[in-house]
Image (cartoon, rainbow, N blue to C red; front, side, top):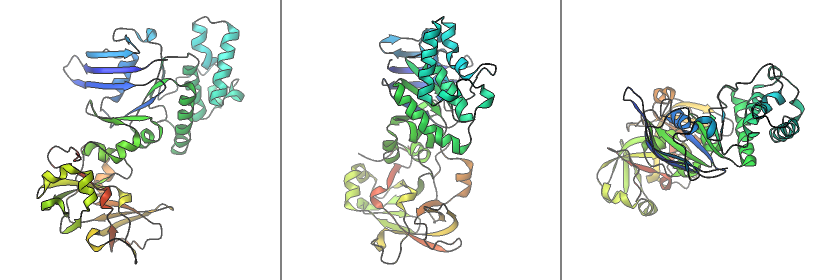
Length: 385
């Protein structure tokens, strides 16, 4: 087992295109690090450089204390799990799992032992004599993982391994992959474009955009303390509501179009840098769950309420997702939001399931002002300290 360290790793192609701009990233032994970002952000290129499938233009890649920039893939002691399972259809599950071991000319009894151990970890014991065609998609993906596990590699690399599965199976496999990774205890780099997958699986998540690392940290920290507009918009489903706003002098309130929301003293303590933005334009962000609907008897004061015109109500059983408009301009972080989110416009609130929310009518929300986020209107950087 080993750690993985990327020190200012870059990738420039012969045509001059720089796909990865000086990435710094450390993956601890046994850690599951998820690289996430929109298509074309460079996450797969980073994975391929770690694997040795792409050359490194600049910087250093280390496994433990060893620089591996110039080592061939077979000399790096890595195992990869791909999006397509790449199983041999004529071989049994046991044959597929043990194939790499046979290439290394290990004794048959040792191969059988390792295959059975992997089968037990993966819940495939009763399927070892089956062919891939007789397995479900999730079982085939576990066979592909088994082929990697039996090699006892120093590093696991996974390139969107669940993207070929249907939605329900993908949810099941997320938990299984995480459990398997913890059982094996190998440093793992996992690439996905699905931020929900990243949040539920990663010990830490590295968010990439246009070949640059935007932020890296535990999933909850990224959700609660995004460093910039891109991370704020990318992490979370539904996405954070982002609006153009103006802070009043003294930062006692924030104006969102024609409405004004009072800010409590605690917010000025947690965001001391706001003091420099009094009277200036900012971008204000609020998560959908921080906009509960106001009911009769609600403790929300009148000066922390926001009134929106309801455009759509989606009933999800445990909650309603209420789409609404206010007269403040919405802000979109480029590449962080999909076309449907942008086309919908307005904002989204998550409210109690029996809320009287009707499209075409108005609804009043109680703004959790302690949970508001603020960003510099020019740079997009979060305003904290």
